[in-house]
Length: 366
Image (cartoon, rainbow, N blue to C red):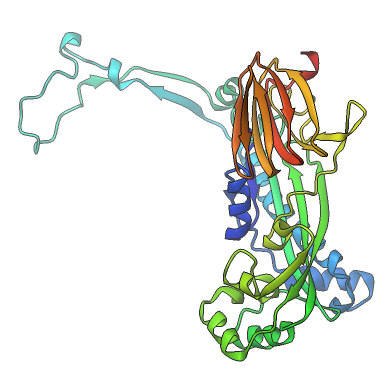
């Protein structure tokens, strides 16, 4: 069992962050009217859009994007539930001719350019009601017990008390970059995650403080000529050409790129403060596959016997797994597979954070 992730954004940096974490999302752009969302929220509060706090803005837009895609998939699921007709399966390799079954699909010695006559060929087929077939196969949006997960995100840059989104034009980008030269600002990112099967929503905002170097008009003009700053929040990127303008960062760099990877709250594992974890999916939601985040601090180590297959995707630091006297080590972006039945030691030289995926999920009975 896998749980699909739908990213309600066409942002390449956000997609790339998920790729590097071992997740290949489906891209479904929300086409949300961001100005209208903020204007409506401000009107409901009796204030102007500029008076909305920046964390409120990014959360409103992230939720609006996720909800737009969620509602689109609800419409698809409704159509699927109401669909009628027959599910027809044909087996052409078992076909027979009307006159001579033994001669079915015999070698045709005619020229390849000629059209073959299949009018006397009977193709065996089976038919059953469409809804019955879908229920038996457990396929589609209506049959899932968990997922797909829909992720909406939005980012804004706060400079001198004013929130900035995408500049869209070279003139606006040039004015903003001039104000950013030698300054310090904050990049805020809102996240909203919706489980389609249950409707459960989880959301939160992150921020990172950025210190910019001083840059000349020539540098600004050359940067704008790349086209990069026109369609990104704050008129800069960390993972592109704009990274050259950033002197220092306080906070999680992934939040600046577009998706913060450290927003899952972790709890002590078996009472230990140096080993923390959180199951992202519970046994009730996904009894055959589990997923979560684990963190090892202060050169932590613990022993474990696997009654399941496990894949670990390293997010930060160095994860070491001792298996049968040998050590397998991985850094950010690496994936480590541990087969069922292995007796292992999870450990780190100093610090490690990773996503674990296990099958079957019921590891607590092991």
